[in-house]
Image (cartoon, rainbow over all chains, first blue to last red):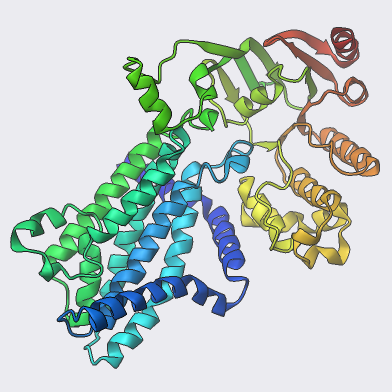
Length: 263
Length: 249
């Protein structure tokens, strides 16, 4: 029991609050240049992407779906967060080589800080999604708060994955290119621009094996159907978050031992 | 007798040769295609430190000397816990602040003041410890009003002053100082060394790595010389400096 507590304590950097706070605020300040409007820049590119998908799928290909704008935004914004979290987090050891090879610092803290910075950015997407949804007459209520649950699921999956990849990148520098490719495939393998219901019945079981599929389709349900996502969606996405947390902890423990010599 | 704060026993550190090659899948595949089933095991290793032992006691001012590539910095990284020993053990019984690089994690867009907190956090200190030393840092760094400007506008000397002030004022009982004094003007260097002296007099333990035998003679109480991966001298500073001078001549 104590061991579990200790592992979680280290994994979520509870002992390093001052470090995490300072590094996150450094990231936010430098990214957004101290202005709140600056935050818009980070959300602007996924929103542009969403707009493009909206035009292509709705206006040109005439996809038969109501509230397609709300649908596409509630998929693309979280996905953009997830993919940025993974790709930036992967670089947290190699990209900070100058720092980690000189100062003893818990390596998971760097990945954690990156994931947290991105999560804060993502939370700025909530008002956008709420406004778009509400303007299309989709009922919002207590169940809308489940958005936080799914965001945390995405955060945990991205953090665990980024941690493993950050070690991988030290050993294989071309992992970056591999991941760029994989993330593109992953994007189309996830119900982001299409809905879970569009997937043929016999393949639906496979899609649950995609760690972020349920979380994103849960977000779709909240912002386009305006109802509480099914228990299955909640459970499967929660299980994935748990799995990635355990994997992350396992890698953190094994560590990192001897990884810095390879930098 | 008091316990040593740093206890190094039979320390050996080797690196794998495969680390010299580019780490990539491409490389891995090439090796696999040559019929090496486990491409990570090359067998060949090169040793950087071989069977080094020494103890450092509280209150000592130890200078470590050695030629380029003798393994000084590796030793420091081992003591501060960045590297893990191949064989042997290192025991540390106190908080150790490595001054291997000044201003670690400094961000150019943040002000000097904000960077103090960031740097202290990265060095492993908490909020209270940092707030307590802010006045001392402001005084020592001589930055005045500049402290609230983004440090991208600082000169490298100003940056070094700020970094050194943060590191030196943090209350670590043991300081590991690598050759960081190469930056900054001569006046500042002298100031840094006298500050380190002052820290030593107030009871801190200092481990200083340098090429400069004169600095060792002037400041240290003890000296360790490393040559060809091994400890070749360990004793009083004056004789150590002489020994080193003969060695490199």
